[in-house]
Image (cartoon, rainbow, N blue to C red; front, side, top):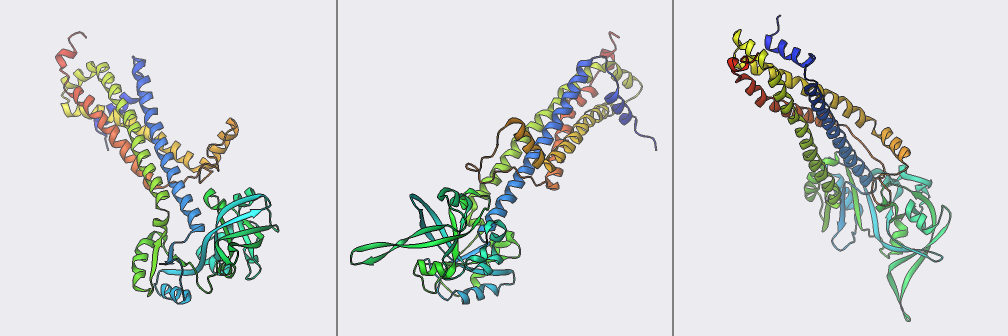
Length: 415
């Protein structure tokens, strides 16, 4: 099947050598600009997706999908409450916990932290602490033995290792004739975990639920119950529905509320970076305007001859739309290939650059995530592709329209 002559001429104009090499240079710059903008947009969106996923994974490795806590900070008859929550078809597991503040002292070192009392077997169902253990074992948390598993940075600041002793000071004091005396208890470090988030690694310690109840004089009561659901993205809806299953005065919160600031910040940053980098793509795409304007000026004689041979204005316009769209399409293709390749290999490229420059871009003491994660989502790639191609196509319209308005007699006057 014969191709339309507008397409053939447009393709010929794109690949033909020009008398004016400056036009070819500007065309190449436009092509590379679009490619660079598209690649940058794909990589940045992939990194932001990676941050969202990594943040969600690390937080939910410590936190829970849904948390039920008592109105006054304590829950009685928690097994019945957990059983009621498990009646919801989308709740997979439950685990009780006791949580409170405490001070850790070792010789002259003092450090405040959050103590969480857990049942190791049940905690495995709602969190991934066992996968983060660097030394020792979570199974060494046994009732009555007063063992503790410390975060890696907390253990480092206290200068303790597995097997060492630490003294825990509970904030609730014991009333004696001599006054209020703080409660102290010696614990043995039975493990060290490292989640990868400085907030938890430096400020969280795990002990057995029974030991926590003894330390804080809670009897059989707990602070709350943690739940795990089938689909973590449905946690807000499930939280609302659980109100029908639970017969107790309690607060219900899901992971999107308890850590909303993290996820909202990442989403806002992703949206802003998308807008900013889309403007870069737009600037690169509109460089096609100058390229095509110079191409129209350079081809005025050819346009006049085509008009005298019977070409209609819309055919002349189509020729230059094809030329501009092809330049944009090539740049878009280069950008997609480069952006996808970099997004898929950013875990190799970034460490290489860090070794070359001798710097670490994301310090663990400053950032919650010290590595640069990446998650390529093809929906982002197609969205970027569509936006870039539409912008490139829009940039061709005005110069093409000007080409269609060229007067053959004026163009051939000095030929």
